Amino acid sequence: MESTVPALLVLEDGRSFAGQSFGAQGETFGEAVFATGMTGYQETLTDPSYCRQVVVATSPHIGNTGWNDEDDESSRIWVAGYVVRDPSPRPSSWRAKRSLSDELTAQGIVGICEIDTRALTRHLREAGSMRVGISTTDLDPTSLAAKVRQIPRMAGSDLAGEVTTSQPYVVPPVGEKKYTVAAVDLGIKSMTPHLMSERGMEVHVLPETTTFAEIRALNPDGVFFSNGPGDPATAAGPTDVLRNVLEAGIPYFGICFGSQIFGLALGFSTYKLKYGHRGLNQPVMDLGTRIVEITAHNHGFAVDAPVGVEIATPYGEARVSHIDLNDQVVEGLELRRGGRLAGFSVQYHPEAAAGPHDAAYLFDRFAAMMTEARDHA
Image 1 (cartoon, rainbow, N blue to C red):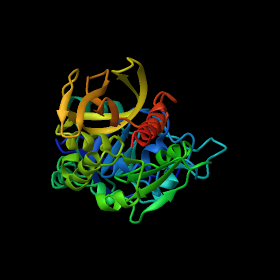
Image 2 (image 1 turned 30 degrees about the vertical axis):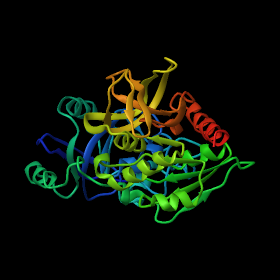
Image 3 (image 1 turned 135 degrees about the vertical axis):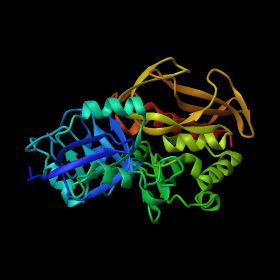
């Protein structure tokens, strides 16, 4: 591991932790959140949903498997900063191309290590996610805290436009083409269109600013909205587009941010969770089958919708389909029209294979919904 220098982490409420630099040296700010995965840090760091967030790893030993060139979920690291307790001094994996510290340094990601991440996590659980700063240049807690309090809060932040693709691209189907899918990129992970392509879907990945007319021009069998960062209440454009999709009767599937936008399009509201769900071990129940799935999460906002009742919307009957068993947070929505499934979403990440395959059926459900819609057209 590269030589380190003293570093300081300060939360907006003034609590501070002194440690050593990890990755690039300098100064960074964002929202402090903790992720409970014991592995998969490369996928976490490259997930666009973590844009402007400083991620605290609750697993104490990070970096064992180094960094490879196969597991990235996007073209770059998106986290604003990284906090670990004990970084591995050297990688030990036949797939590793370089160390985690080297990759953080190369991409300019400021981090901190050798702090009590358990105490930090407990503080965030009790006080809630908050703004944070990490610095190797300003080691005065009072001075750094003042800077932290000047940065924008996550609530009210419109970030999907920062992470979306600049140009449309196509992920071809594996084998025979069965469906055309318009996938709106709000911070999409590369594994998502890959899993769709394995089911015969030709996936057109589109920018966040895509209009309904542009989607309609593709004559898609289904529309997909991806995960992404920021406050869903700011995504007025995508929400209006989705309302047009639902009104046109095009089958819809959304995950994470796409689930929150689905909720807004159906007439529900969203709210910010105290400290969110982030990690690979969240138990979620499918209320239709009563099956419990072990799922991967990364969300700080949730849909406010009643559980156990059907709600009439302009597009059909909506209901909550999944809940988190830890705190009863809404984890999925379902829309039916004429007795048939017209759209659905989940708040978690089915492409992340936390179960490892507990949630893979959702991509098959999307395919079945498109087939049924085509048969009844």
